[in-house]
Image (cartoon, rainbow over all chains, first blue to last red):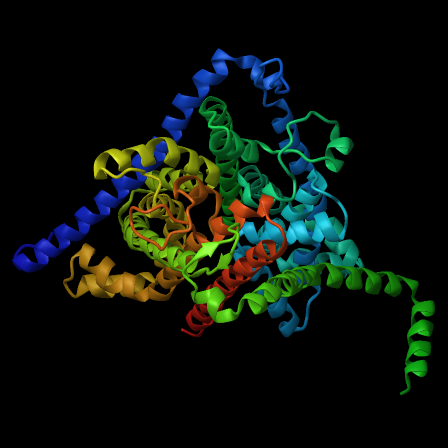
Amino acid sequence: MIEGLSTKRKVWCLIMRTLCYISLVIVVALTAFMLLYVLFKGIPNIIENPRMLIETPSVRRGIDGILPDIMNTVYVVIATLIMVLPLGVGAAIYLTEYARNRRVVEIIEFASETLSGIPSIIYGLVGMLLFVQLLGFRTSLLAGSCTLVIMNLPTIMRTTEEALKTVPQSYREGAFALGAGKWRVIRTVVLPTCINGIVTGCILTVGRILGESAALLFTAGLAHRLYGFFEGMANSGATLTVALYVYASERGDFDIAYAIAAILIILTVIINLITTYLGRIMERRNGQ
Amino acid sequence: MSLNERITVLVSGYKANPKRLIEDLIHFIFLILGLITVGCVLIITIYLIISGLPAIIEIGPIEFLFGTRWASTASEPAFGILPFILTSIYGTAGAIIIGVPIGFFVAVYLAKMAPRKFKETMQLCVGVLAGIPSVIYGLVGMSVLVPAIRAIFDVPDGASLFAAIIVLSVMILPSVINVSLSALEAVPHEYEEASLSLGATSIETYFRVTVPAARSGIFTAIVLGIGRAIGEAMAIMMVAGNVANMPGLFKSVRFLTTAVASEMSYSSGLQREALFSIALVLFFFIMLINAVLNFLKTRSQKI
């Protein structure tokens, strides 16, 4: 620091620097606390009763089990991705490759931003009205997945769009010069180059589905029964997150709740590691 | 040219070049895909208005919005949602007051002072914090925060507005940090170099030059935080006590979101319609926040 700074300035600098460090410590401590506390409370429950991972819960036989919830989560993730990928990637392709009218682009982007700002509880309500009641899906995983599709559309759109924008214009021009049509250029040149961005979008979506509860509560329901994929789609079922909520706040069963929480936290960390890694790959490629 | 003629020209064009037909068809399909988001926004808006308005009209808009008593299942039901509106506003304000300064200082530190490796680790931390499902915040809040508040402040029940504010302020931290961080990083280095060469210390430069230059990005972060906080349901449902009181720091309260979530499963008739009206009010707030965000965005683009 420069000599001869007035005391007032020195004190001000010191205060600001301290505030930065205090805030930093708070955030680090919070993250560490959330991770460690949940893991320390949850993992012993899983180790003590590992059968819960492969059992269906039964009050009569007195067993706890979260296998149906795990499978429901997997089903919802698969169904949502199958539906949202073509829609989101297609919309992104339209925005970056086809759209010439700026007005249309603005409207679509405004709509997608609006969608990403709407709280999940409202998605839950509209999903209930639209899919459960109007379209007659009843309370089922299919209705839940459809609700999640609308919710995650902006995420897939945004990540794909960003990836599409990084594809060098010369690739397209080269392909056009060889006589390829627009669709062929997109299919064989543009899309394969931005597969990273699409994968990132998928993983972010998986993360959001894992964490979602409010939108699924009224659309996918609370049942804990084990089904196959197509049977499950037609029936009500709780995902891990919804099950966690039900166990903790309606049954007061904190042991299972923390076991589920530990699983979810581990998945969250893995998902974050993967997206960071993919992001770094993209950055490196763009740097070249 | 009449419509018929136009169609003939179009068809003969396609006959001469069938490849163009396919290209145009694909273009059309992508246009439809692009417009799906617009359709979704319209459907959501229309549905909420159709299902939310009848109850507001039946109860009376003034009585509904400014009534202080909510007793949906009483023999003489009262549907006043002022307690929910005020709770949502107070809760969000509280979360902003606690969460934004912390997030802001962390963002300044990460953008300007942190070594590269440490910054990357911290960004991972913030990503994890953002990715933790909200019910886990609720769960930890229920089993740690609520008993702690009861013990420290000596109140009969720790499940209160205060607990909800703490949980919310943690939950908005990641978006505040991330958005402010990218705003701070976008400030041109020349600004800082000019300030440094005039004799300002590095800390003075960061807070008096960089931060004002990134002002609109930081505002965006705050508004985004408000949106997050006002829309959060499950976490605060688990820690706020869920009684329709007028808000008080250590009182058990209900937010707009939790009012919908907690009664939906067993509601019927006018009560159910009133819940949709609450969702409509919430939607109105969110749209207001979206409008502010858009305004900030266009303004920062102009600068």
